[in-house]
Amino acid sequence: MNSKKVLEEKGALGTPPSKLPNLITFGRFLLVPIVMILLLTDAPWVGILTATLIFIAGMSDILDGYLARHWKSETNMGKLLDPLVDKTLVMAVLIMMIGLSRVHPVLVVIIVGREIFITGLRAIASSHGLVIGAKTAAKYKTTFQMIAVGGLAIHETYFGINFHLIGLLLLYISLAFSLYSAIEYVELFFKVLYERK
Image (cartoon, rainbow, N blue to C red):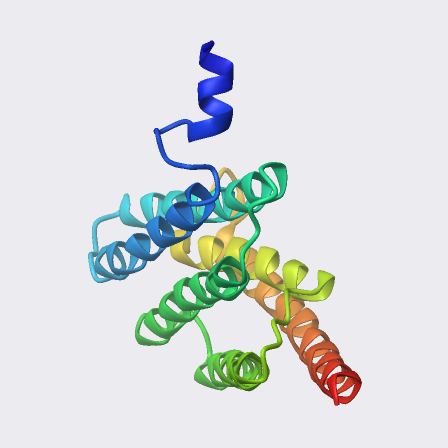
């Protein structure tokens, strides 16, 4: 059996392909406490390191989605956990940003409130045996949020680029996608629930 076939059957780390995307998702959870601890540190290099870890989290999100589709191993658990991990990381960073006076509390309340509402909606859907996957607007929202919190984490101006200002701008853009996607989720929830009945 050649190495290519082994990789296809067992995955790159000896893990069955069906489990590897979920393992990557769980791995992203580990970055949340690390990022929070870093944001409590005043060292000048912390912002760049934190942004790098957030970037890695974003790339791993793309990777596990690609692997799940490539190996045709998408699962309901993955559909539920994947956005939950992203929400946890973004909300944790934004809450930390309030303490660092880098973002207004009202903005964070709106973003966190939306995430709690949609998570609750998904939980209700799940209790009815329905799984609501992420829509396109929600994916844009997550992308902008990840870049935004990375910019806010760096905070300083480097090479003439004001990362704090860019972070705030992208956060407001993500808010627009966030509210739009929330409406999409509500419409889809009631549509699927109606069709199920």
